[in-house]
Amino acid sequence: MKVYFNLAAATDRRQRYALAWAIPTLAVSLLVLVWLAATVVHSQRREYRVRQSIKQVKAQEASVHSREVHLEQQINRPEYQDMIRKTRFVNQLISQRHFSLTQLTYKVSKLLPPSARLSGLALASSSIKHPEVQFAVMGKDEESIETFLNHLEDSADFSDVIIKSQGFRDTNGSGTKQVALICTANYVADTPPSGN
Image (cartoon, rainbow, N blue to C red; front, side, top):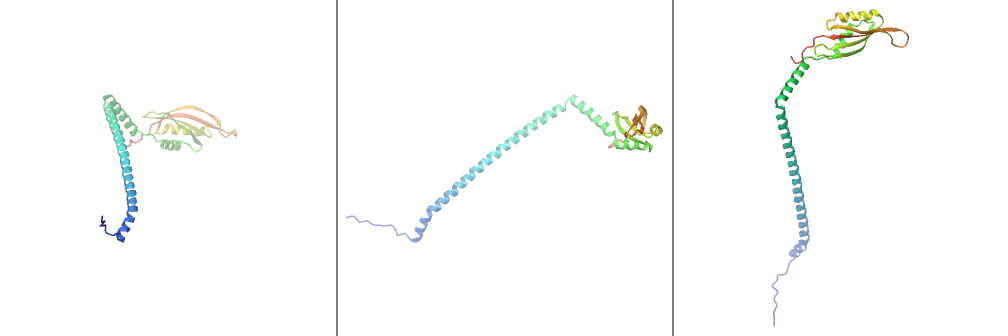
């Protein structure tokens, strides 16, 4: 005859409660573990993309640096240095001598008598030393035009006055004619050097 012994201890209530919650806890733990793994994989992928973009930026930076070095080598060549020196010289001349259209218009308007008006002003030649300016003046009579020409010739700001054309024009269609004058003069007013 066989005798069977049950050596197992009787389970108490706490053990049964823990056993009942073990499976849901295990399932939640697995979900958290999967979420953590997915987060790590996503972070690694993002880190990989960031590293790749950093590599691209460094490659572009190296390319720009090599182009900069190449351009500096070209600029340092003697023929370019000569051109740079000439360009600086011309820029210096330009900065020392500037032409103010507002100042010119003001000076011309002071030369006009009350019975004449300036109807046009243009730069006929852009000489660096003395630009040639063309005036178009309308006057009520010949005397006003002559007064303007006398003032222009006597002015210290202008020289070499040349009359291009003079005649009568009907300005407003009413039949009253005005005297029209087109002349040129060299603008010799001294402009102060800028920066000196």
